[in-house]
Structure formats: structure tokens, C-alpha cells
Image (spheres, rainbow, N blue to C red):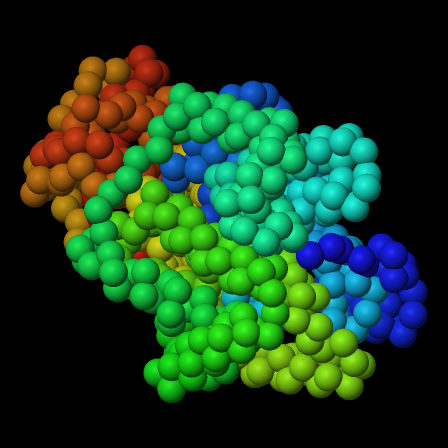
Length: 585
């Protein structure tokens, strides 16, 4: 099969070219509007927290993150954290531009494969509107990986096609450079050379499969060798910096994971479905049984029909899609299979199929001469847009992260109203950071880049904390233990330069708590307090006062205290260690 796109007309000329421009404009506006409703969530906060006030260095860019290595992603995170912190509008500008760039390159690729006619229009509509990519674009931390990898993947195909259509071998540099670029943003960049090779196989016009394989491999062997060297070098670097580990599936049913990913996720998703899915945890999209069954049946029917109508290019396009899907599934087993079969229903794990599917669909349409008329092409595009639109309307509200936005905006507003407040660094709602983030799922991580520069866990006369809605409230203590009463009911414990043990009426364990000390004295000094194995200090002010200290680390049944002012006494009539809770929250 020969690509005639460049010979039939330019990419942007004619009526179909103008329709393509219109589709690009509509999808850009649509994605900008959808992104404008969203907000940061989950990994976004942790990546930004790791990036703020950090110098750009090799160590920073190549840090491991949940088993991943993506210096490009941390470069974008660094820029946002340090120059446009928690500004969602500026956060999504690169995403909108990247998505537009992906669509433009896809259009150029489809034009070179299917020609400057109408067949490329449905391909662009499919690529721009496929709901499989929705979560990957709306989720900031995922989008800064997914969109660059998609762009570089398409650039690699475009560079290969430019060479194949009579260009010089310097276009191979574009392909290899695109492989490098993709690997800077995500491990799935290792599939970019595979995509290019599969497209090359489908476009070769050799009649026999052995001859096709031989000609494709031999005709550009320096390109394949260079690409393979880049991938192998990257894997060696990855192993040295962030060792790749695999874990068994939590359910032990790998077959169910594959079935979920391919049959119930990818297949209906590629057809624009599953129209009316059930969405749980904002990322698991479960299709109605009838839809994935129908989608699977339609896929088989289209495969059979196009294979009979077309030639070897069509058959190799379908084979290429099967090979790429298998490789995509294999990558999932290297990273997330241990989370269980249900994660096969997360669209972002099937989103990588979309660009390759769009390119290979161009091959099938060119080879079978389908959708060559304006009526058939526009009708198909409209039908796909309608189905994808129905799915998007159901899934989209789950990508807005409204809980995150309300919480962060409420905290920031209260911080601006009282800039001197000291916050307890407590947890945040699971909708913002789920439990598997462990100790990272806390307020200081969420607000690490906040321009209000909140202060956490330092001694304060009255500690505050954020309630589940993000409102800043004073801290009350629950489930606590108190100091044992003393014979001196007025002064309580006499704290001087000589350390004194303040006995508790119960033991405290190593969990984080708040130590509240009520005291009075007539001299300013510095107090030292020891709880278990941990030592704390705070400034003592004359008069009747109280101080809250965040303590943790080791069990204790007493508090040891002293001050550094000779001849002065700090009276401690009350002392309590308890778990903080917001007053009135």
C-alpha cells in the first residue's frame, strides 16, 4: 500500500481540510471548558510538593515516583510549583496546547496515510473525542505524562512517513528523537518504536508476510537499531535509578484483569462507549453488559468485513492493533496488576491504545476505500461524536474533583483572613488523597505550593486545623490523658532549670497527638519538654498562657520539662495529651 496523501493535496486545503480545522477548533474549546471545571487531586499534590523550592538538578528530575521515572513530568511540575503555584488556569494551559498539538500531528499522519480526502475526518473526530482519554487528560499528573507521550508517538509515526514518502534519512532523527522525548515522560514510551514498526508493516506492499517482515526490517534497519538502543539504554537507566518491581495480582485472577481491560474497557471505549457506565471511585468505569457485548460483536463484524473488503494492509493493521494491545497489557502487569482485576476498568490504562488505533484506522480506511464521500464520512463522524458525547456527559462530572477545589479554596481563604494561624498537619479527605499515600496524605502536602505559605506543627498558643470541608478551626483534644494532680492546687508542677517529671494518668503511644500545656510565669524563657524519646522547645511568655505542641514517636507515661531562666519558675497547673479534632467541625 502506498501513501498518497501528500500527492492528493495539502493537509489544510479543500472542504475536508476546512472541516478538519473546524474539528480542531471545536475540540480545543471543548477540552478547555472541560478542564476549566476540574482541579488538582491525588498525585498532583505530591508531585507539586516534591517540586516546590527545589533546584533543577539531575537528582531532582530523575527521582523515583511510585516506581516511575519521568523527568519530563517533574520538569513541568517544577515550573508550575515554583512559578504558577496552585493556579489551575495556568496549570491547564500546557494541557490544552499539548492536546491541540496531538490532534494536529494526528491530522498530518492521517493525511499522509489516507489522503487529503474525507476519510481522515472521522479519524480525527475519533482521536479527539474518544472517552478513553478523558480521565487521562482531566487528571493533571496523568495528563503531563499521557499527552507528551501521545504527541511524541505521533511525531515518530509522522517522521517515519515523511521518510517513507521520499524524504531523506534525516527524518529518522525525528523518529529517534521522538522515542527519547516519550521516554522522558513515561515508561510507556518504550512502545513508540513498536507503533512505528507496526505502521511500517501495515503500509508495506509486499505480498508475502515473510517478505513484508524482511523488507520492513531491512529497509530501515539503522532506525530500528537506534530506537532499540535508546529503549535498552533507558531500561538500564531505569533499573539503576528506579528498579522495576512486579507484584502478583491481589486477586490472583490475571485473566479477569485482561478481560476487564480489553473486553469491558478498551473495546467499548474505542467505540465511544460505554454510554451509560457506572463510575466508582472517580476512575473505575464499568459498562453495562449489553454495551460491551454489542461493542465486541461490532468489532468482530467490522474486522471480518474490512478484512474481506481490503487487502494485506487491512489485515496487517488489525494484526498490529492486536500486537500493540498485547504489549499494552504486558506493561500493566509490570506496574499495577497487584492492585486487582478491577483496575482493568480504569480507562487511563487503555487510553494508550487510542493514538495507535487512530493511525491504524487510517490504514484500514485508505486500503478499503471506505468513507471517501463527504456524506458517509461526516455521518460516521457525527454518529461517533454523539455516542462519545453521551459517555463523556456521564463520566465528566467525576473528573472535576469538586471536593478538592472547595477544600483548598476554603483553607486558603481562611489563611488569608488570619495569616498568623498555625495549622496541625493532619490528614485530608480520601477524595483528595487516598489512604495508600500513607503519611504523604496530609494537609502540608496539599498546601505545599500555596502562596499563603501556611505554617504547620510549630508550638502555638492555640493550634488550628482544617475540618473535612476545609474550614480552619481551633483544635480540641479528645481521647487524651492528663497530668496527675499535685498537692499544690494553685501552681501545679513547679518547672525550673532542673528537669521535672510530670506524671500522666495514663500512657500515650507513638501516634501523633497534641500536647497542651497550661502555664503561668513572671519571666520570659525557653522551655524544654521531653515526651518519650523526643525533645521539644518553645518560648515561654510572662503571664497566664497555654501552648500546643505536636508530639509523636515513642510511648510515654510522663512528660519531662525544664526552663532555661535561672531563678524563675514556670507553674504548670494543667497538661493534656490528646488527639486533635476541629472545634465545631
